[in-house]
Image (cartoon, rainbow over all chains, first blue to last red; front, side):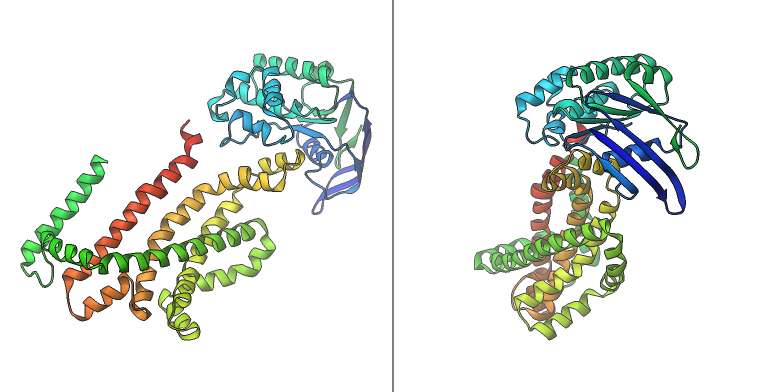
Length: 196
Length: 245
């Protein structure tokens, strides 16, 4: 259902990715691992369609969702609006239900700056799952969190994935994270990077 | 508010002191000496009429300069290729003296309202463009990527993602804009119109009537302070609300 065929991706003269071929089925979770700087984030940006400048072809569904390393919220809009503006098709009830799933329904009228970092991350997760995506992309979503918070977020993500069953691609450094969430682990290595 | 009042009182005391030391009401009258002629100007309808004329011109030029400057700054900040082409124009217009633009507009368009508003607008556009361009260059690429992945509608993106990021820049441009525009409007009125505060100042300048020059300029300053306190500052507070929360 998601087919990634990247023949070559370069920034100017520097080749970053070559011959990266894989596919992800509906409901399947694939982890992408590899040393930092190898091109994992570049790969995700191609898969998400943020960067379209590459040789190859990527087939992806319409309904995408992404969780970045940082929460990437709109600090000038309320918690509720952070979801409703991104998903205009959802009504307020659906947005509140999505917030309730991450325990933020009583914070709907606050601004993101009034939330703790952990709550901001949960909001970012709620935004991703609110519209029932067919493809979910997670870019090291638990990096820079302390162990307890990371574990809490991991558990939450796990249960949301189990509930909505999107095809999931996620990048991580952590072996344990990869094994816990993923059905399959792909490793990126070499320069230019390819699947090994 | 108390600080503001004290600060203005301080300026008033300085004025009184200078007037007392100078001791020549022809050059600098006491503040109190302005009251009777001020009331006379209000009663005769002259002051309200000329203030209104100037205010309308300021509003037109302000609205046009902000709209065009905002659009240009946004385009130049977002598209480096357009920026490369338009930047030299911007530098030329930024450095073109206000006086030259006013004179040229009067010569080319004629001594009319259109020429005045055009001249003032052209004077202000480069400043607004420069400030907004900085804002557009500083737009957060992560939020852009987010909006792209979630396929946020274009209009929503502009209104809820781009504009809030530009708001501080637009506010800065509006602030400096209003102040600069009314001064240029006065010069343009001085040179080529038969109404407005600038025209009245020209008239009383020729009569060497310091009292009336002061009355007209102070009245307009009062109007602009009112605009600042009742419109600009509350608007700024509103768009900054999320920072304070």
